[in-house]
Image (cartoon, rainbow, N blue to C red; front, side, top):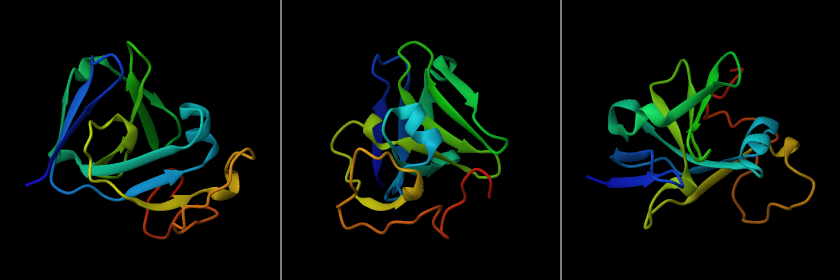
Length: 138
């Protein structure tokens, strides 16, 4: 079985995943851009396959009626996104230790992307969400 791990910048929060991870979804929505400073690139894992060491150091911000965002309360590292109706958690791909084995899957909310960059990696692009994903507001 696959095993991946990662952490925040200061190490106060460490996480471990079991099993295969979803391909990386690059979200360019305004909330993700404002929280991360660019776009949020994340994979996800079923909640029962995610272990968080230092969970008391995770602060959660209710960013919409449907979703919350988790970050390290010590160093501020952006780590998680969680929809209230789903049994999985999105994890910032950059927070994983290498090697991850992760590959890009798609770009969503490209209509909201920053005007200072182009997307030229050949992955599918959607102006809003992908029909395969449940996001805040769905």
